[in-house]
Image (cartoon, rainbow over all chains, first blue to last red; front, side, top):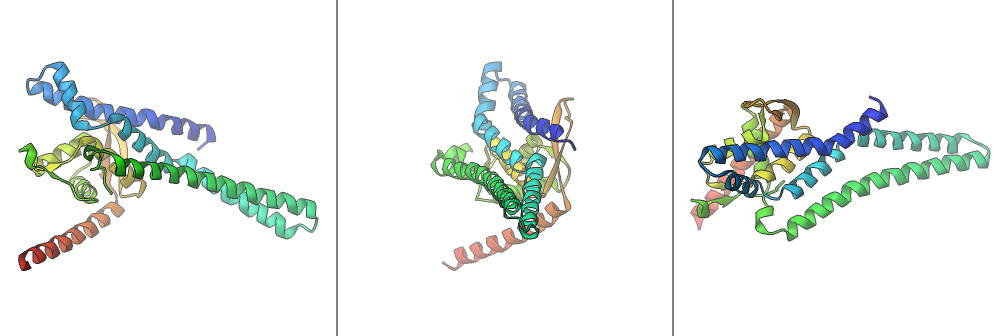
Length: 142
Length: 110
């Protein structure tokens, strides 16, 4: 898979999540309409039953991107860069070239750290939200 | 009836989803409907809470998703259980039985 495809897929995640959640809400609306509710009442009831759409969407996009192919590729790339840097550092007798190896290792570690912190911050924020959210938002378990 | 609804215990939603998907692949709406029907509306499950759980379970490899066409000809995402998910279901079911047995014994003893 090309990097451009991976990027496209990364951007598509948000749209896919939105489509999936919209489908659910529209199915609920349809059900309430069949039960005799007015269009406005059915829509309101569907949204109420679903819960906070924006929060749910954000959580899904975060989780989905966390395990996206692009993220996996970046992780593998960071390992390759680190290994290359280490090899240059060990095999090179010239201190200048060895310094290039050190730089590569630093880049790889920084990149990996960035990926980790991004994943960590989203889950930490999620946890804070769960802890502070009113009761209706808490059933999002695991 | 609504006032008698019980909140789900932490982690229970995953067990219910796995159990529901053990029968057939389904979209999110179908899963929630099946859970509500089976629980006869005694459990309080906010529909939206299902999706983060589904995405996490897919991340762990317990379920797999693919886009398909729903019963009303709409594009919908369908989830199905993987082999890892099947094993997870068995493990979680056994765990649930152990916990429920233990709690029942404690309640009967006191």
